[in-house]
Length: 377
Ligand code: PMP
Image 1 (cartoon, rainbow, N blue to C red):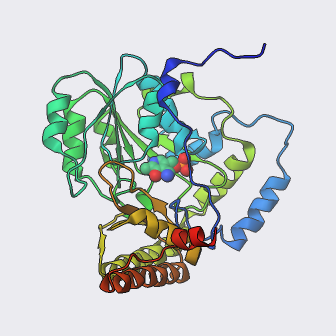
Image 2 (image 1 turned 135 degrees about the horizontal axis):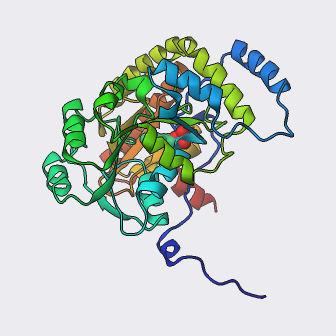
């Protein structure tokens, strides 16, 4: 056949997810831990990996990891589901609780995968835009919940990319006002230290999502987990891919989870680096910086896309450009790196912004990497 029939109509409105996987000397675009696993863990992982029977499928439910996560959280293994990163679990949740004729609620600007998965599954996505300070518009939220037709609510807490926390009282009110499944995405929990875990026993409709990709330096291997009522987990096991978490990942995630106190000092250092980052940015004229409870910082600067480009092309610093996202006009997001990376980023920003100020003073457009590139071309 010289042609192929098209896929579902729903895909017409979708475009492939662009993770902006670019290379730079200073990588501050994906909220990863800037440090690899500690050497001692790498050695132990190499040992564990040498014992993997590669010819055998992995344990579909990652039983041992599941048991360890359950125990650490004072739950039963039946309350835990391990996935190929939080991304896979979000997809499973939307597949099971969303779908045609089902209503999914989120709060943009927020993590883009919620809306992408809702579109892919033909769920009806209702978006309640955040206020100018990125807090949740509770009047609009509770008015919408009163209609009684919402099936799934996803709230990132802290929110990506704004870094905002929702007051716990608001989350409790949401749990009390609806029988929708309420997913609190705590991907950045290890940085914010806020969790809804204590409320699980009272609310069968609460699910909590966590990941190994951020604080625990395991973004490469893809591991995340969900804490929820056993009935919720059971439903999800009907739609999930049975072998999505491979043996390598299970071994690494178990090791890291058992040794998680080792990461405490790195996390504390990253929080100190975040303070330096926020303070440094706030000192630069023309930059508005938003407070953050996570390992990244959102800031607003005029002509953000050209600043993004100059950071990359002139200083080899990669951050994330959100300036075309509704509600985030002129916003960039920078992840918290090592002390040295934070210093390099701030120096780059100061240089870009002072050149702009000088150019504005003389009434000429500031030269940018692109302009120079075009001149050369
Ligand atoms: N939730 C939020 C809010 C995130 O920011 C991310 C990663 N960017 C994820 C979930 C998914 O993380 P992963 O798939 O790496 O576990």
